[in-house]
Image 1: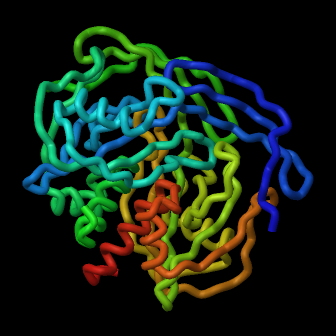
Image 2: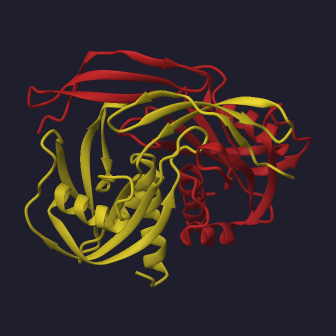
Length: 182
Length: 182
């Protein structure tokens, strides 16, 4: 079955600071056309950093779209469209938590909400941590927490940790660690 | 540390079919103000449905923002704000795969990309499947695949399955099943 759609028209509704928005017309496999709303994003990176005591580094941040403080692993968007994901991950880990890592293990990519959003989040695990000074962006407010890996997994299974990249990356870290691969 | 932000101004840039977009001004904890770009979405549901042979039901769909066919568990957005997530999950599972389930187990909520997006995806596992006719939306093109749970977990760990809700829900299903809770 051919599932492919073609772009017939593209119209930018908004070009902004973090995201752009398009309103496209797509040609469907059955020859009909459909509206496609698309959010563009430069892509982001997250890092599940594991201490030598099997704790995971978290940051607590106020997330405006939900009006809620939530726990997430350190993460950020790429500074420019083609920034190398690993370099971006190292920078964000250092800025948000002060930590640097000896080893980075790729955990694959995450598509947050593929129906309308084109963002890609590259995920990494990191081990062999050393600590320096935090250096968050000027208008970024966050607190750092260390949570034992098994406790973090419980908090994900119970629904207490809601962030998508955090759920995926920490559960991958847990399974790879259980398999002796990290 | 007080992390809370306040909404000072809200301006709709776009009100659309699936999403709306706002451009807000927020008051930060340090008294400064910042632009907040917010994508609004009515919320969605996904279902990790497990057959009696320990296979997971997947749908393959073309996802326009990536111009790519990807594997996801059955899912959809709420028909109206406030539609009960479980009712929505039952409907989407039936429409996309033809399956109905005897038991639904809540797997918590997922925040796809909390920096700019307010979507909530409610996740469920489902067991005790029986099969009827598929009934996808008129302009929805998808193929159904059954993948053994252990193989699906491998495909997530290797990076082959990229969708966020699918990664989170299938890994939760795996861990809860290993713990005898499903």
